Length: 639
Image 1 (spheres, rainbow, N blue to C red):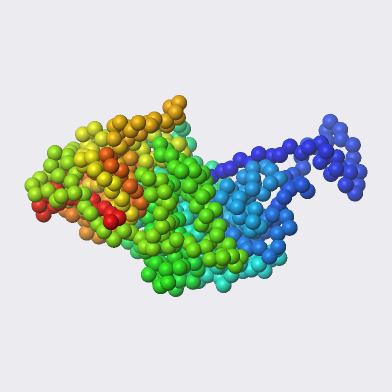
Image 2 (image 1 turned 45 degrees about the vertical axis):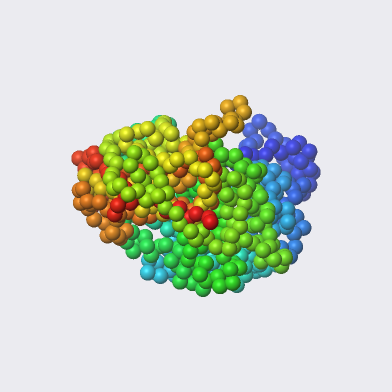
C-alpha cells in the first residue's frame, strides 16, 4: 500500500529564524539557483513530540527500520511496540502536524498523552527495512531452517529498545491488528523478559482454516492481489494490478479459474502466488504454519488480551482459535482474555459508532480502548492498579450493551432445524425430506450487490452485515425462516452448522448464513436517507463457506459421489447477539459466494486452481431435513 504524505508549508517566520541561525550567510539566490534541498524537517521546535528513526540490528546482521515517538519530557516510560508490513514511517507521519496525537494513529492518542513511548517497525524485507520478506514467516523449525523468524526479530528489537531508549522504564508491550496481530503473537513465543503484555487484534493465525487465504478450503480471491502488492518493490508500490475500474464479478468470471486469472496477469511465477496455486489443501505446508498450534506448544508467559470484531471480514478465525489454545493454560483465569466488539476488521482501532446500517451506543471502539486496553497495559507496564480485565468481554448486538462473562462460549446448545415448506423450527421435524436448487458456476451468487469493487472500502468493510434481501429470492439460494419470536433469544459463541446435503456433481461448495430478520414495520427510520431503513432487514449474524471435497479430511480431498447424502460440519464466526421479540431467524444455503471466493467447478479436479472451462457444470443441490438427516444450526444459547 502506498501512502502519500502531505508536506507542510514552512512559515515565513520559521524561514527567517532558520536563516538567522545559520553560522554562514548564504549566497544570494539568482534565477538559476537550484531549487532543491536534501530534506525538510517537518518536526519544528514548537512540536510537542520527539521522533527518532533507527536501523535496529538483528542477530543475523539485518537492520530493521524503527521509528520512535514520544511526548516531549517523557521519562521512566513504557514502550508500546507494533511490528508492521504496512509502512512504519507512515504510521508516525499520518498528518503533517506539530501534535503527536495527529501524527500517530487514532488508537495511539491515549497512550501518547500518558507518556508512552510509541514504536513502529517495518518487518524485514519491507519498506525501509533490510532483508527478505517471507509471507507470515514460519517459526524456526520444520518449515524454517534459518533460525530467524518474527519471534527472534521481536526479541532482538526489544533488546535494542530497552538498551537504547533512555526514557524507557524497561517494560514493553506489543499491540497490532491483522498482520500486526500475527507479529504480536510471534513476539510471545520465546519472549524477551522485558515483554510484559500483549494485545493481538484480529490476528492472522491460520490462513487456510479461516483467516486471509482460505476458509474451510475455499480460496479467497483477493489473496493474490495482496501477496503481489506486498511482494513487489518492498511494498513501496508497483505491485497493483492495472485492471481499471469495473465490476470484479464480471472480471473474475470472464478470467476463468484462479490459475487462468493469474496467468492473464503474468504473475504465476511470484512465490506468494505459487504458494496458493500449488497448495490448495491443508497439508503440512499450511497446518505447520498455524500460529495457534505454535502457541499451544509453548508455556504461557505473557498476559494476552485477544480482540476480534464480530463482523471481521478478514480474520474472524484467528483470535478465537488463539483463545482456545491459550485459555487451558490460564489456570487462574487472569492471564488470557477474549474481547469481541461490534466491529469490522481492525475496527477496534478506529471509530466505533456504527457499521453499515447498524448504529451503536457511542464510540464503542474508543470506549473499549480507554476502559480496557489502556488500563491493561498500565497495570503490566507501569505498575498501575489491577484493571480487573474481564476474562470475556463481548458486545451484545441487538440490545447494544457490553457484557462480561468468565468463559466462552455459552454452555447450552439449541438447534434450529430446517424443515419442509421453508420453515425453520426449534422442534426437530418428524417428516424427512429435502429442498433443492440448481447451482450454475457460470452464474454464481454474488456476495454483495453488483457492481462489485473489492478495492472499494465502503463495499468491503461492512459486507458481512449487508441486507440479504438482494439474494433471498434467487432460485439458487434456499431459505428457511422461523415464526416470529415471542421472547428474546440470546446467543454467545460460534453457531455450529450440521448440514446434510447431496449434489449431482462430484464437488460442491456450501455456504450457510444465519440471519436475523427484522419485522417489516420497524417504526424508526433514519433521517434524511443517510442509512437504509431497518424494516424487514435481513441482518447476517454469521456467514461461512465449506468446500465439499474436504468432507472427510482437510488434508486429503476426495470426489463426492453424485446423489449421496453427506454430513458437513463447521462453525460460523463467534458472536454475541440477541434476536428480539417479533424478529425471525433465517437460515440460507447456497453454493457460491462470488467473487470473494473462487468458483467451485462442481466437477472434481485434482487442483481446483487450474480447473478448465469444461469442468464448470451445473449441479442440482439437495439440502436434507428431518429423520436421520436433520440439517440444523446449533445455537449457543444463553439460559
